[in-house]
Image (cartoon, rainbow, N blue to C red; front, side, top):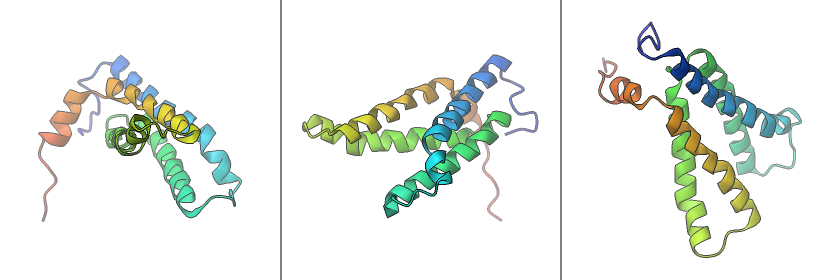
Length: 138
């Protein structure tokens, strides 16, 4: 991203993007951080891994409030993991009639991901991450 980050985007577009980061900060902050701070001793190994990863995601989302375009890969990661989880865990359980309460609750939480493709300026993503020059290898 250029030094004049967001110069070609209107302020409302950058602020909409910041709202996406704020959703991550507040949502994960209220759901994940109480368990991290309280050092939740009841977590199984993978539950602890997931909670700590989500905690890190919320901390990095704070940077997105200041640098909304530079942190776009963070929102793209959020879209990717939720889409994969919905496709390979939730959908098969739902389609076979084996959806339990925990899976249903997680699926509804993951469906909030529909907000992120709306706030992401996809032309900027295409121009800078996919079509723009990559970093040199040597």
